[in-house]
View 1: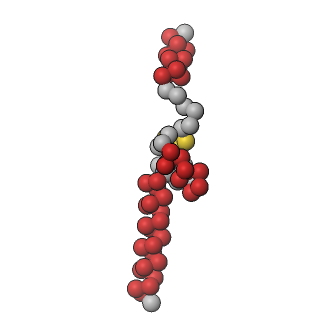
View 2: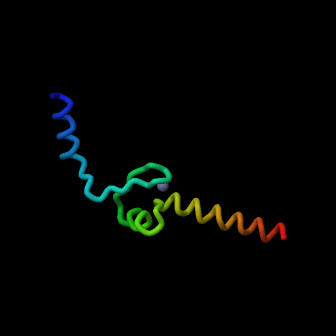
View 3: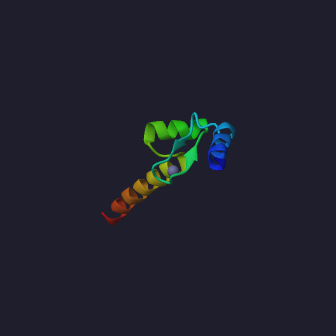
Length: 66
Ligand SMILES: [Zn+2]
């Protein structure tokens, strides 16, 4: 009974309408920019930056090796 009341309390205090979890870092975001990034890239902004950087770095390494 107590736990049920606590869950109800959480539901009321934490609005989870527009929360999206990033599949990469498992963090939840609710701001417009991260939601847009998650909708288009399936990453939050931080993970998107990390992945883009990783790809460009690998590309640069290839260019340097050749
Ligand atoms: Zn992320």
